[in-house]
Length: 81
Image (tube, rainbow, N blue to C red; front, side):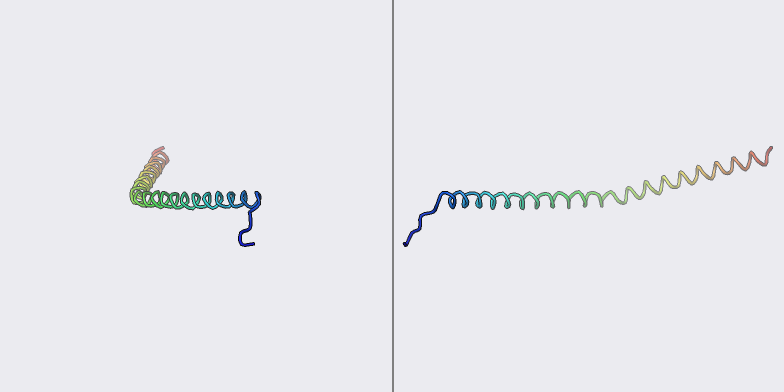
């Protein structure tokens, strides 16, 4: 009665539980790596935020300038005829 022999079911169950535990550990490690990579991507994105804003301002200035020139040309054409 001091040692109880395990059944094949119990042995297989223990093997599967160990496999599941190892799989979960790998998933946790992979999630940590993914999180680190995502943080790096976000940091790189933040570094380009100033450059993106500069180009956005430049684009807005060009569009505004083009619109102003079109309005001036339309006014000149309307008053000149």
